[in-house]
Amino acid sequence: MRRLVIAVAIGFLAASCGAALGPAGPSTTPPAASRTILLATTTSTQDSGLLDVLVPDFEKKTGYKVKTAAVGTGAALAIGARGDADVVLVHAPSLEANFMKAGNGERRLFVMHNDFIVVGPPSDPAKLKGKMILDALRAVASGQAPFISRGDNSGTDVLEKSLWKQAGLTPAKPWYVEAATGMGQTLQIASEKNAYTITDRATYLSQQSHLRLDILNGGDPPLLNYYHVITLSPTKFPKVNAPGANAFADYLVHPDTQKSIAAFGVEKFGQQLFFPDAGKPEPTG
Image (cartoon, rainbow, N blue to C red):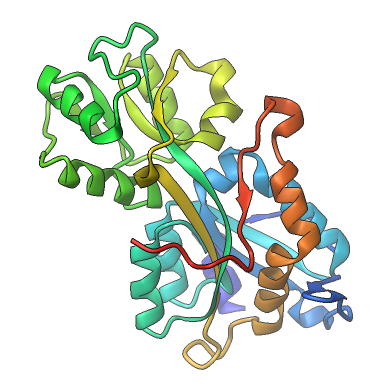
């Protein structure tokens, strides 16, 4: 009960309800007392609309009810490190590695990837279009063009900071602004300020009709964005709903779910937004 109170206090939102898929198919309906799963995940899975597809499907096929906190990856892992979640779905491999080393996680499964892109004003005053990502960032800094950073220790923020470092640059005010907001809000700010930003492609496409931002750079290997699901350690956190967490993790890597992930966005946007990776070799670097 204490964990549920804490979870609601930090903004966990209820979804609907429903019987779990394991690797081989449906499992038995869980006892009523353990039907709630606390999921901490990233804003990109929510803002892109992916959770709106996966969570109801999981609940329909299971006896579980999912309560979700969609925050930055850093915040999602912090929730998990306090024992205030059962399972996390995140996209910052370096932070995830530290999370596992601390004994917070039990299972870590490769789920999917998408990619990051640089977006900015259609006029592209810094002339970024077509440049490789590090050269694009150097052009932003050279022209001191407005750049909006999420600044929230999310997976996107960690990636962005690493790219500035690789480019040999330390961005600074007044042209570089850390918004401390989720991806959707950061895109809105960049649009209003005629600024550049880095975003995952899925969130951008889901909100493109409301933005005055064009895709200027993308496709470079450093911009690939990997997602993992991690179940919390019942040894470290005895109150964790381990059966529910494992059911959700197994659901995400199930072949049927992987097909749903591959199909997500194709009809609406004419392109795949996420690429299923269950069972594939772990990314390196």
